Amino acid sequence: MDISVIIPLYNEAESLPELTEWISRVLDLEGFNYEIILVDDGSDDDSWDVIEKLKTQYPKIVGIKFRRNYGKSAALNVGFEAAQGSVVVTMDADLQDNPDEIPELYRRIKDEKLDLISGWKQKRFDPLTKTIPTKFFNAVTRSMSGIKNLHDFNCGLKAYRKEVVKSIEVYGEMHRYIPVIAKWAGFKKIGEQVVEHRARKYGKTKFGFSRFINGFLDLLSIFFVGKFAKRPMHFFGTLGVISFFTGTIIALWIIGQKLYHVAYHIRYSREITAQPLFYIALVAIVVGFQLFLTGFISELVSRNAPERNSYQIEKTV
Image (cartoon, rainbow, N blue to C red):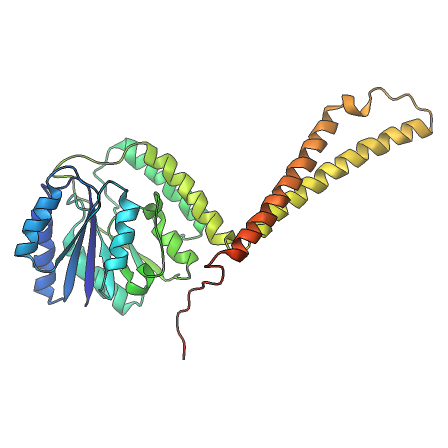
């Protein structure tokens, strides 16, 4: 199979007929062997009824319905598991992504041998309350991930080699950072394509302000897990050792200063326990010990995890 088009959706009954007709028309015209995977993320409108009706008209539709709303990441992850195409394309169900872009995304994945292509909605039709935070988070993500060539990590229109989607897992709000997850998994051939952003035709956006907070927390999780999942002691242990020895040096300096004054009968203005610096040193020692212990326990958990020696193998001969 050439292409799997994955569309996560929540309460998009109005847009589904037009969207599936558009995708089918474009891919049939190009002669692709394809499937359209519609993942209903617990909609409470008529979305699933519409999908069942569309299935009779378009046999290449695969419908998956969640019992309740889990979020876009869960819908994408289930879609990735079900996908059969050699190239997997994801897009939103609100008609803001243009299906006419799919053939070019497929061609570039195949011809340029890219692992992933992320769309860039260079000209957007979103309000400033959405575009300004998006620009900020894209800048932060570029800096933390080292993927300098992407302008829009959260664009719903993306294309992947099949191997990529079968090797990664997304949950929480991590769908925003799939290029980062793919890079940590070893897929570094990441490209970008300017795509059309269309004004929403039906309904309203399903994402509120909380997505920015959750998204930032997930970015920190991705960064930590991707860098230190196999060696948590390197992270916690390093911080612990630095904190512990900093506190110890400060404490020894204070005690040494006290002993010097006593030995030479020099009047000492304050007792050790009366100095704020002493308590700072004490806190640093305790925190350092706790961080080191956290790293040690994390290391034990990591070594006993079933996936502790699970690695991405690209080829064997």
